[in-house]
Length: 42
Image (tube, rainbow, N blue to C red):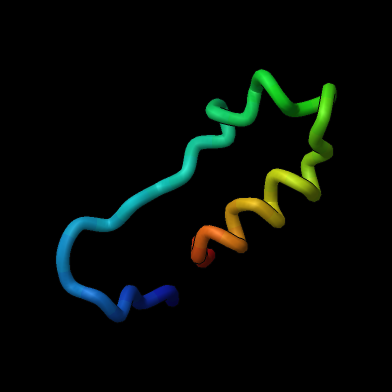
């Protein structure tokens, strides 16, 4: 099971925010890479 180390509010990423770029300038893999670079985890 996933455990979150830090206290405080958790943040999430919605791929809806990529809808303008997806398919035009970014692939799905690019979107996943961006979220990983932001520090997103499972």
